[in-house]
Length: 381
Image (cartoon, rainbow, N blue to C red; front, side, top):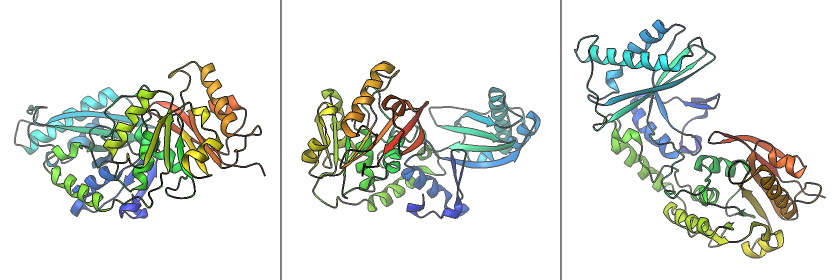
């Protein structure tokens, strides 16, 4: 968030969550801007309030005392979900029921209704998704402003057989330290629906990840579509043009249907002119072949090959991993001339299959699948 003006001292990262503190005077615009620019987050929530709770009674009382009438419009349906870690309260379903009851009590009091009355809820009018997070006995009550997960950028309506999430692909590009329009090309020889290359190309043009999608905050009258339109207008003003006519993004796949889908996705994403897609066997993309195809002698191979349990058996996946190593690595596990290699795989399956530790590895998740990004960048001198 620093690249769009938020100060580092206002950003805190804890246990996979990023907390951003903003002034009260224009927080609605901050909600819109963060949703627009969050590249690797799954959703954006704003905090209604927080309190300590070690019993169900204190949980109920703390929740009831928050100003829900300020954030839940009349007749909107209220949906409650949440999580608990390292806390005395760990019964999620019980906390859901209590939170919903406390919110209704709070709304009834604010609207002059009976304390134990009911409120009108109509999903056709609108809904508010409330999320509670209990960490070390501190309850945070939040409202989801994203709706669909932020990995849904809006450019990939087609469903490939095993697509990688856009948020993960974006993170892989950053972790591999690719620098667009520089001295090396980005190559994905198992491109599938093209997500890795599309995310990289959009990053190179500073295209806001949420530019082409709807957010649930647009349906909340106290934020509304105006904030989204203003955030999108700002994002469009910050987009860049390619620094050269030369292409730096190259994808291929042995499946012609996947390649056709990748081209359509790239077109919807606004980066089709930057990416060269073709139908090819990955292992024909040798360093020498890639130098001819890309017009540069330095290549970053960044890819998500098929793996065991997803599209094939573990044994078949291991064979593909060994083929990857023999195509782009030397026998000692160092990179062939002109190559950097980054491969994502479940846990350390890639390292074990090829018998060489990565020069750098990062633990990641593809949905619920625990993965590892294996980066090989050392050369045999």
